[in-house]
Length: 461
Image: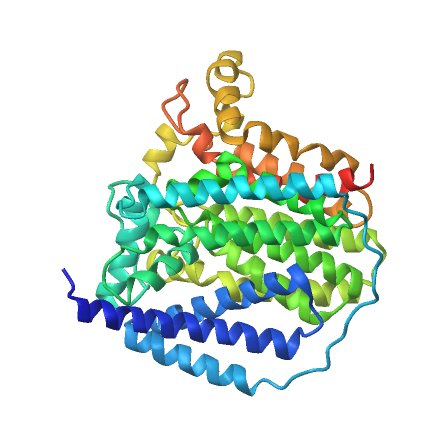
């Protein structure tokens, strides 16, 4: 047990690192994105903060020297670099007329957010002193992070449950756990980590809805409904899983792709690429989700009649940024196992041993599409548990999309299809699918796109 002095030092280190990352975010956004206002500016700040947090921890870990002193040193260096960034003139876009937000609509939105925040506060009050106990946290998220601290490096695949390959996951979310654990060498603050990401996801969804011309009150209500959806809320608050890191950054990437389609500013395309890269580096389903988003974005640009040279240039920029911001875990896997996608075998490219767990338990929703009993006894009840009325209420806007929202609407069925065929979405023995509700997390990015579309559609009524 660490003494009071050790905790004081730990809190000083934590404050120094988080303060430096906050300073980097403020300085970068002030220097390069001064024209951003409101929710879009808040989202940009969070993206740059998260990128800085990853850099200050992963750089020393990649060099084999992870320690709290090394992290502090890199954080200070990052802050110094941010101070040196020259400021560019603020470019504010033309003012657009604001859709009206009636008082009754604001009352609904404020009431919804009061309920969400009350739930978060009550749950935290009742559980803040309890250790996290979700099986994923205890079998790979926290143990893998602890091994980084012990060995000072990320160039290893630590596997604590036989026959699984959890140590090969993309692990940006675990870096957020590392940030609050490394200063103290214990994990008492881990439960708090998903909360800011969850709330930032709501801000990003609000910003996307506003970019689609939804009234402010309707956008706020849609964001509250998304955050309140059980499959979004419970993994973050109850299980303390890092999925909210993916959701927040995916929403941010979507926002800045939309804004770039409107204003053509290269800086916002850079923000989009960095945000999507962080999402890709957080979970395996982030890889498929981001790939779909980029392909749909490029297709939308082709259909919009943009010059092929401009499409290729912007596509290469976004792809390079995604790879730089999220690809380190694939490089790690390649270096350690010879296969960046381990344990998936890619014929002719990357080998892998037989995955006996996947063969026996890794069934997908697609494996049960023609099974009425599975729909009646497992799929529909579990999906209701996962999405409830809040989730269902966010879907209709996909059918009413127009303008720039059409690209978002096109990505929704693609993400749903990817979810349906993804292994482990119906985990369990053949004929007995389990964890359908929990693993419905893999389709939440589609719901995240549907929420602002629905807000925009309601605002047009």
